[in-house]
Image: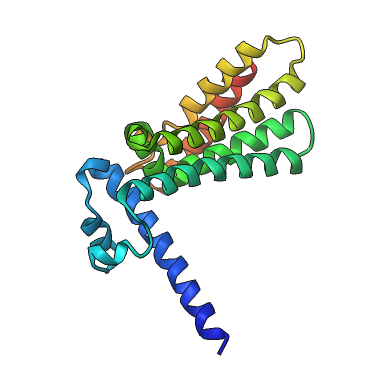
Length: 197
């Protein structure tokens, strides 16, 4: 008897993740305002009204998408900095983590760049808070590597590196696996140079 509710819960979570994946792709291609709840449902094989069992509104889908990606970056980056050896190797591990994340999440990066203004004020505040914490994770690591450096300059370096790494929506598509590997290595080298030069 206990397996049935668990199975329903797993199926519901799977459908929810499928809707978020579909939202990332559709919002990226058509923009937040160009996609309806019906479009989201169609993309995963359910009716538009069925989407409301998982999300109360399209804005809630956008919020979960962008808060989720910001949370994943902060949590993943924290794990990388704690797990990696100290110093330069920790910085390289963090760069590799972010580049990999950016390559795998090009749609979400594009949605963030274009549609984050559609978030509610409260959700926008949450995203900004998570992103500030993520920036400070990088700045703290850079400060340990260059204790004489100005903190404001270290933040500029971090943001410059994010610009490079988050360029993937415009550089990854239509490149193929081999070219993506070359792009990954290029972004890692360029980001390291921006952070340490």
